Image (cartoon, rainbow over the protein chains, first blue to last red):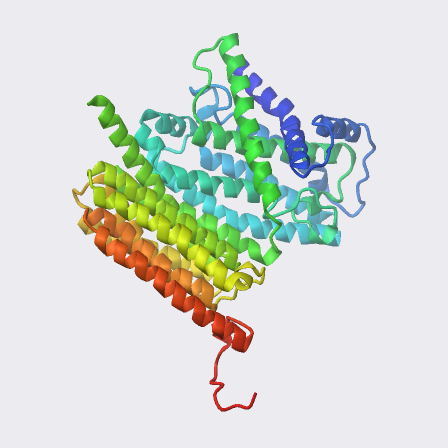
Length: 312
Length: 228
């Protein structure tokens, strides 16, 4: 139980740092100085101390959505191996499908809230994110299919144990293709560059950000924080379940857990550098090119699934 | 002995990964929108083919396959790109978007269908066969068919040429797993490939000089007899 709390705290407290680091590395690659890596914390602090403005046209959805969006990634955290390689207390409440479902519930409610406030940009952002999500959905499902073909399960702890079990499983083409497809999913779902520009401040071009335009003060802080956590949770699934399922704590003691936190940080830094490299070397796609990008991800996932039965 | 077995296993795994990347490169080559990236993908695909040839050559103790790998690298990863950029430099470097007859999502779905089909057709042959054939045969056939499709939907001369060479790559990817003595064929094919590219490049250049474009999809009627 203590570990569960620890797990949640790690995601809760370190996710803004991860985002700050990503922004900083990107700015550095582009030969700019960039904001401090602590900037997301300052932003959250500032927003929590501000007043909130709520449109009189909006309904209860608008008020509740920040909490839903904030809680969703926290819930997912207890389902996935963040620090330990054995299932914790609540790990069997749901599998990877449930995790994906919880995250998409959060995203769905945020879209609802954006439309609830009645601004034009909110509607636009909602419809665009729905377009992207509906294209990501089949890829997610196919990835889960091929994962369950390979590991006979979709519980993240079992999947992770499967890749480690034999080198043959780890170096199989299926594994490589699943990882490639999953990275593309992360880019699309968290609004990173080939799909959406997270630094863009031009309302007409926004996809993800346009949904939060009407929020202010603590609500905006919760939504931003939820977004940071969503990125971190998906990255953790990638590094801990798919790419490098080593270095997790095997026993409950302080030293092991601290080592696990340190290693997790290291893996995430490597991943963030990779994302920064992808983002700085690609241009944002035009809206109607996004289906092409996700189409390639879809083909990758399906090929992973087709290839699977031929290798064991 | 144990160490040798270890190396053997690792090489089989490497071949599997190469197969996956080879297949992916064919799909991306189909959808790439700039001539330069098509060329770059083709070079990478050829290097992957060479890696697979080296791996299989090591596994089957076949010098011929090693030679195939070297020929592939020299002909397809060095000579052909050099030739193309020299004769058709401006055309390849232009950042113009390439056009397709079929839009990309549909193409991707068709590529998916081709992949399923090629695995389906090859499956009976794979019963009880070795790990290398398991990867190379279906992937090679798949890349070959996707290459044919790419050739059909591209509307420009340069990508069409590269798609043709990708078909060649697919055939060899399957071929190196079936026979271990194809060096002479590959030598011939490599040289022929260079020749074909040379001739096609010169023709394309002439075409570009006459018409100002290499977009063959736009050439719908004969020009002979019209006054300049």
